[in-house]
Length: 391
Image (cartoon, rainbow, N blue to C red; front, side, top):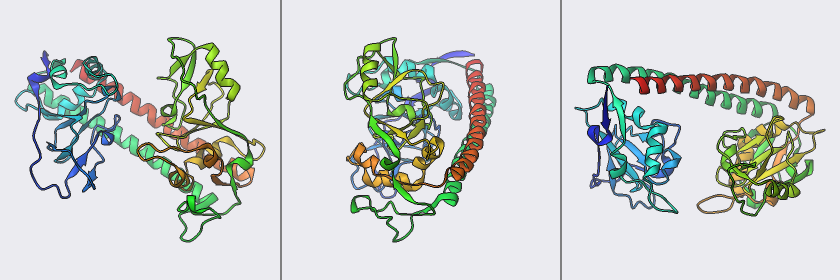
């Protein structure tokens, strides 16, 4: 095992794309996903493209702007990318190229990268900084075996992730089967022109969300003064996964918390919806949730619990036809926003409680299956970290 610097085993590829741009993948920072080792999305033949940096299949694309987002993807093909992406090419005489992604997609690398970020509003990392990153690397013959193990583990992890996606799709299909079909041609369900395109054929009465809610509001409009201790403060990104994520939240003071609670006391069972950014993401407040406040990017839905079950409402919000209503009704060019008055008018099907309970039982089994798959993924991640750290 030898300690190497990144520039010992890799170089920054700085090629300019001078070829025909037709049908060539064009990659921006928004296409790099932190949890995906492979680049899976890009634009083709966009209306405007000022990017000139080229990349090749097998090279790594590192999002050098806002490195704390931990964006790095392996290119499956040649293409063009943003100048805010550093293209890293392995030196095959020094490292097995298939191994490099696993050494760089680590917390240790991104922590090192962030220490070299320059700029206040949109910090960027230079190659001259990350090229100094050091890690332990086994001899070439051992590298090949290690790469095979890591990719086998990654393939297994990907199969579990696909199973989670399939479970979500199954639940959506069951929802459509029990409560209505999305996208009926010519069926407008009484929507006005501002929400045209959100058509659905429902088997049950369609009601506006506000008609079955005691309160629909959002978080504080004041800017909190974050502290090292105090009360948790959630933003829209903390509900992207479909569950409340308290692992990376900021904190506010006790005084500010009480100011927030004057606007809306958050209780177990309430449904939270993201109004911007990850538009339409939703989560239920669990019974064991710690005290927390919310930012204005989140709406709190307090519904009639005698007519509506929270888990049903949560899945309903995630359904295709409700998400289409969000998409059609949202405002904004770059970042979409959903105003409370629009959210209040979103239409949902209202089946009997007995049918809601039947669906919730199915949803609970799906959630249990997904939880087990996520545990398996976490276990694989630990194994992969162990392999990288110990060779």
